[in-house]
Image (cartoon, rainbow, N blue to C red; front, side, top):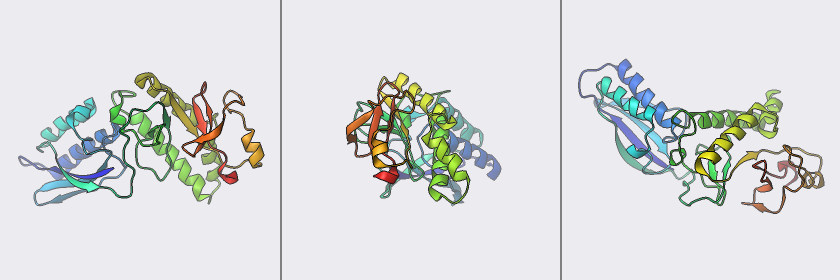
Length: 257
């Protein structure tokens, strides 16, 4: 991923409140389309212009060809707020994040965790994130539903990793059970992405706990009950199970690896 700086310069008299509203709307639209990453953006006013530093999947993430209808509408909103179209300045590559996928995937997986800021759609061949704007819009012209699902999954993951409150168990149920709302929405999103991209797309089902290593190896697909989903060799040294009909991948319990 890369760091860029966006600059918004007034071309006529405006107000802080008008500029704030227009800039924040533009950033939210870019985020909903997967063109910028993260959830909080510090916008500063300095030397007569507004500036914000952002994380983007690729150097070209803000190219006009990727703009959704909402992004285009917010560009007009900037004009209405007496701001010029944003100018971007390339800062450099972020050394603490993953690079984005550039290869055509033979399969994809919906996978995230609370430590990941990148796209939750991964190339199944190398697990590198696929920028969401690279695929057709999933719903209503962009990818807001996918990003909302990712944010909620990450919140549950952080709760269960902290293991400090009773909420841990409810959060774990959401990310590890095929009967949870989190699974239902994520699995439906997975199906939508597969339909749009024509590429087999799987859902990652988190697994922790379990009685023993042997019991884990004998685990059946929790959706269809098939015992044929166990793999002789784990995919990407991570996924020990894959059910092709159900489009689910999972791991041996982290407690027994």
